[in-house]
Image (cartoon, rainbow, N blue to C red; front, side):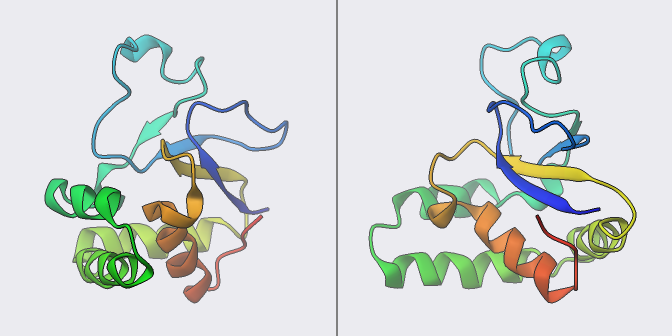
Length: 128
């Protein structure tokens, strides 16, 4: 059992399980009824996405130093009780179920999902 970190909208793996969308906004132009069938997500978890202001900062990070600053700020945001409790829950569930979480960004290295991967690993989550 494990958590798979994915790019939303990409084809699903056979044993991937439900997709959790850790994005601030739903996909543009996609009817809600097609979120799951279009490989976007089955459950929306915006509590695990950066704030609107921080999301813009991460998108604009051009240097490693700017990205590191984004990561520090995101870690601070994800220490809020609701986000921290969700991360703890997902880490625990990863030992008994397959599921995935993701975002739309093409490059995981410059996406908040890379930070989520680190935070889940720090909580001893099973990661694929």
